Length: 272
Image (cartoon, rainbow, N blue to C red; front, side):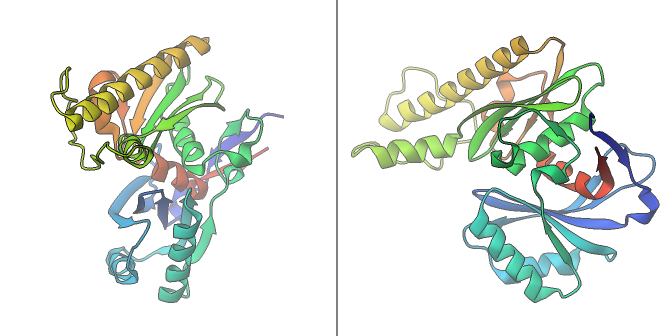
């Protein structure tokens, strides 16, 4: 039997704290719902470093969030960072109920070989895009972060998988780590890649990474469209979305698509 989803009564929900624990950043927000909107509304955004955040920073953020939040939903692709976050939350608050989100918590059907092995960030962003897309169209989700993913949700609302490649900073780091002479250009500028030919090694690396990512993503989006039997809405999210935004002019830019998807765990019930 196909899964069905419905909203819970918004007035009884209050607010929920949400975290997207990535390989580079921990993104925090407060999510709330009102009866006249389709999706949760996020506020009180904050970012922590996944590798070395301070408990004082989390405490300062918790002091700023409005009352009425009794639970903390955590989606993580970085287990060590998530464990540190959960431990810190427990020390700072005895009342917040924590939940580490897994794929079957989210209101999204999946057609994959091993759903549990898929990054929860991909599933969460797909769940959110599934709510935003036109009901007669599919969805293609481009998430540019430490890694870049291009994922598909069918017109029937089924997550079908996608493609993964390194993001710009990971590409730069891998070139430096895997060679003896190439420099690390981790501080690559968030702008259009330099024109060819690159007149220095750093320019050549920046051009290769910048134009390479654009070419890869546009090709993957084109291939994704070919695999679908209907038109698709295109969504763009992630902290490195600047690297491809110019070559995806019709994309719907939603910076916090993962956090919105995580919020659905609270505001949308899944029944099978």
